[in-house]
Amino acid sequence: MSTIRYERDETGVVTLILDDPSQSANTMNEAFMTSIREVTDRLHEERDDIRGVIITSAKKTFFAGGDLRDILRTGPADIPAVSENVRGLTSALRRLETLGKPVVAAIGGAALGGGLEIALACHHRIAVNHASVQIGLPEVTLGLLPGAGGITRTVRMLGVVGALTQVLLKGQRFRPAQALEAGLISELVETAAQLEPAARAWIEANPEAQQPWDRKGYRMPGGTPATPSLAQILPSVPANLRKQLKGAPYPAPLAIMSAAVEGAQVDFDTAQKIETRYFAGLSTGQTAKNMTRAFFFDMQSANGLAREYGSDNRAPVRKVVVLGAGMMGAAITYVCANAGMTVVLKDVSPDAAERGKAYSAKLLEKAVARGRKSQAAADEILARITPTVSAEDAAGAEAVIEAVFEDPDVKGKVFGEIEPYLAPGALLCSNTSTLPITLLGEKVARPEDFIGLHFFSPVDKMPLVEIIKGEKTSEDTVGRALAIVQQIKKTPILVNDSRGFFTSRVIGTFTTEGMAMLGEGIPAASIEQASTQAGYPAPVLALMDELTLTLPRKIRDETKAGVIAEGKQWTPHPADAVLDRVIDEFGRKGRSSGAGFTTMWTANESASGRD
Ligand code: NAD
Image (tube, rainbow, N blue to C red; front, side, top):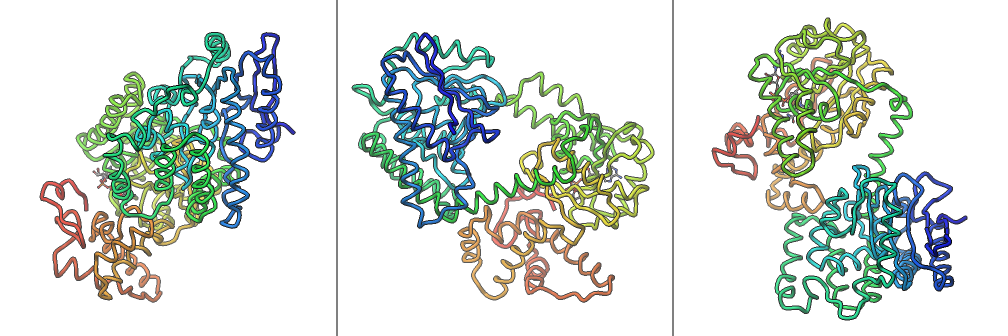
């Protein structure tokens, strides 16, 4: 079975159509590895009759890249086999770019990872300037490196520093115009129909096409590591990288940097071998497996839940009410309006409601300034938000997301005010972080339509939303909550109603352990170092300082009271005494008081913090 169709027309132009008949997307599976070798052999055999080559795709995405399931299957013992496999692919791509005829990639859908690496082996890359076309090498975000020539070619196109800082270490997904600016794409067209004529025109105009690095007199942009100006800055690169990673032991960025710098000092084929060696090490190691599993977990949990509850097939919510225009309410408003919903943002005073809307105005202004949104699109989004104090404005809304103070009575009151105005059967959601959903559900008229929708700050950046099912929450309500989370393009997890839900229990285990260690006499600096090295983005005690120390204590005390009220036994944690002492004896309450376990803030900084 071939995954690449080979079509040669009467003008001698060969179109290679990436079209795996066994899948909805093209990936670097075994069939592709065989196909790419076969078509490059055929191109060389028929070379004299060929005028040029266009590579295009019959799928929605140009090419989806490596098959990540392979990463989970292989271990260090497979290094020789993995290397052999990669060599098969990289030598085929090398044969493609040294065919002696112009080769053009015509990109009408996402070309990420392996997809872009195929395109980089072409002499010219034309992409459609459309939002669905993403371009980049995101391997680093999965603990991997682009091992199909991605490092070797970007270094030769953009120079060592350019390739590392702009493309390889960030793993950014570029829009077509950004990719053109970054030098990853050579030309843009506005519609898919313009791709082929543009590719043919380029072939006509460039019969002698060659990769820059195969031309006589080629010089690497910015120089090689032997060039004094580059040699001067290179020694500081690993140190800066370690600083950026905060000492966390992520192997991929260091391997990428090594492959780029070492590969820049040798010829193309040797550089490719170096890249393969680093790739084989990373792809068979544990970190890439862990990061790949996390990626699959995100996708599978979301896709699996959508299937189970049929949330894909529901009509989108058009009008939503957000109750409370504070930190969370304002940010939830932004993501809902951004997803096309009309949002009524209700608070107790017009000022508070307006302040909530101003948050969206600020984010939109930034998006326009950075070229991520047009002014017209930003204006439209902002116009969808109505700040108000009046419940009547909620008329006909299909969903409510409540984010008022963390107090069951206040929450009960705001739902009571709004319920009569909503569309019949409207979805009722609370963003509570700690209150039992079953308890809050008793405060509304329709507990079967009530559910927890727990967002994380900053809402516009954090993909996760925890959906919490109360005792009376209906299955249909779960389906609707999943659909709304999909609509705002977040990743849902579904949990039962238990104290701390899922996320607070997980993070709580981490923070209480850190504090307990301090109580056992382990120096704070060692605890911070150990938690950073374990790969957490913030050291554990500094994280407590950011969260503020009084909030976890309040939650702990409320949980304790609740457990005792249920007639159950409360077992104190060794961390409790440490937290009480830091707050009561030392007066350090975290950001709001200017000091925590390990952090001191200036008056200005702490004033902007929250308790
Ligand atoms: P906040 O204090 O910033 O905002 C609360 C807002 O609710 C204020 O603007 C207040 O004026 C408004 N409000 C109070 N009573 C009201 C009423 N009767 N009608 C309308 N508005 C009213 O609080 P926040 O940090 O945004 O938290 C809100 C909710 O989100 C809480 O339940 C909290 O547990 C939860 N939460 C917070 C975070 C976080 O990181 N802060 C994360 C997840 C969930």
